[in-house]
Length: 336
Image 1 (tube, rainbow, N blue to C red):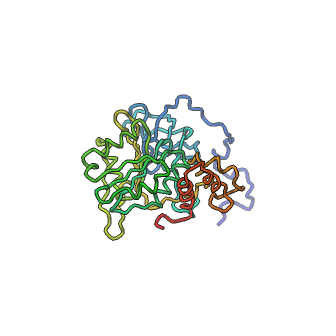
Image 2 (tube, one colour):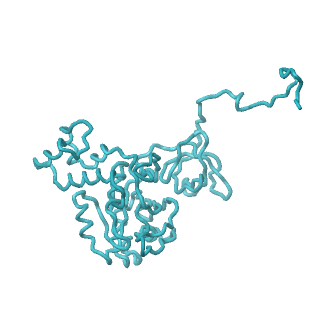
Image 3 (spheres, rainbow, N blue to C red):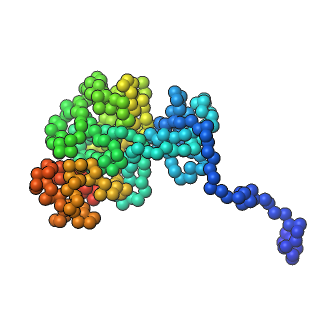
């Protein structure tokens, strides 16, 4: 049965107004001149916990930001209820320019790039010398991500009571990366935390590592008043730990200050987003030698000018080997 007669163009047909359709479109965005500055501490299902002055504020991203997302470490500007009281919610209206970015993809074939941490000064790559066995390829990938994102790397080798660190340190010696070696006893009795403070005091340091290497235990020792649940035992069959840190979290350090950012344990570190030509920027002693390289040189081919540069004594051959190993790691899986 027809609701209206034959003539569907009658004037008495009711039409619902469409406010969105009638509203003129504009590219003008609110200025939010009264916005307060803050720092993102953690992100959980679309809700962001931010530090505003001396209090934590729960916030959500404003619609005008579109698809731009804020991550842990971001400097943001917020409006709304900034009291930090229970059941209040502010809005993030601006995300500041980032000084550094730690990014990863699920694997090398995945084009989806995920920003893990923003504005960190340093990347602490935590690896156990045994139980689970060290994975140099994963370390290499973290180094490439650090160099590409503008973070200074720091090697933190744990469980030295189970295996000596000499072989692993020799592998990375040519890169001149600072390092800290700790044992299991030192993790629990505070000595490891004290030595780490010398490297991370006054800086923003993101901690990354394979599950079960003692990363969260280290963070708990550095910030005992904000203890996170420690990692479970390592699986005796797979040699892998159990993920217990499920989201990145920034924690303040006591004097001399600084921040520690604990991140979930990783089992893979894709580098699909990394342009190999940027990795050379982490090798200032080799970079001048690339002027004679052919266009789009991979720095691992017969015509590469770096071979002659090193042969003339401008740089250590071990440095060139390290560069090529890091460039090649993008083509290999972490477990290779």
